Length: 284
Image (cartoon, rainbow, N blue to C red; front, side, top):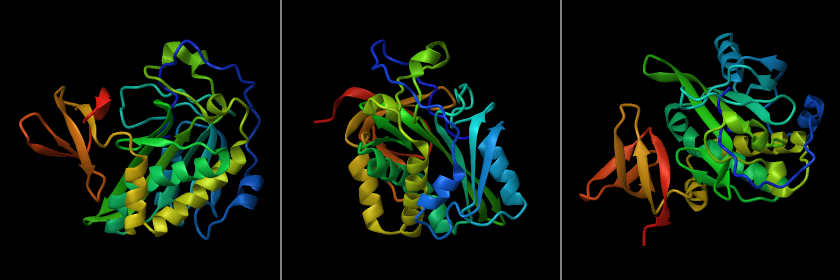
């Protein structure tokens, strides 16, 4: 699946928490859903290679708009950066993919809709305020706990369907996988200092996603993204697949989610991809 965010290195000192490792109960998720179409077709798997692959197969077979595939464990999960191994232990976190069949305008807004929705759902249940690191990672105190991957299938220049993959570290201790992780990570349980039931978080995130998706063109949603951003106004370094790096100040984000970075020569760059590193001090 998309985005098991757990592949990020841990700091040495972490709180000790008794982590919850019980099976997800889909009936409880369905009971708490406040949706018309998201999650009304819920496919639950104990173990799979990737919920993104499962959701793609389901979409190609005609799965309805809003179908969700969730798995307890992934053996070949993937994120935006294909060269990283994603750690996805069973019964601890949430790994799921939402199938949507968007119009052109909404498919361009998915990179804004999704992180805002996940952040809102987490805040509602756990009482934390996640920040967004461009393009769509969610972090708490500078450590990643959510990863998102969005893929689309196009036909005749129009979106046929899109796959919105999400990985949320709920009850997970990155320190137990330190040798496999490359950047700082955390989980809801570690930040809260107690185990977190996954079902309410899952239901709240799916419900928030439907609201955000339905209001994708509303300026309020865009402002919600900006308010949660920890990238805008910061000095950044952006690395690209070709080995090049851009240094500058992240000034804004476009309506389609592109990051606008101004370099030292006062040239404005519109970025649709890249790995962002935040510099220590924000731009004055």
